[in-house]
Amino acid sequence: MGLDKRNPFILILINGLKEKNKPISFDEFIDSIASRVGETKTKDGLRRVFALFDKDENGTVDFEELKTIAKQLHDGINDDDLLELMHSTHINNKTATNEGFTFDEFYGVVSKFTNK
Image (cartoon, rainbow, N blue to C red):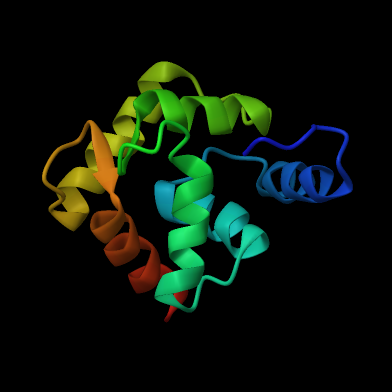
């Protein structure tokens, strides 16, 4: 997310993930992280969150970008688990591919989860 890991905001995010003390789903990841980095109840707010994840600004959050986020948050998720997370999100939400998520797919997944 481009923030120093000593940043108090990042420490809150890391502690929020540590409190779960178990593997998390993509939806839980979004709930833990996105709800703290921006307004997740609006499309514009989610667009800002998506932009934080889409480092290369190509309109897709892909495996490497998700891996970077997990690494920065010291999540400890391995490549296989991250690929499984992406694949199950693809299956459960009928995204176009399991290799990354466009903003519209991201918005569909996240807004379904955060606007319950």
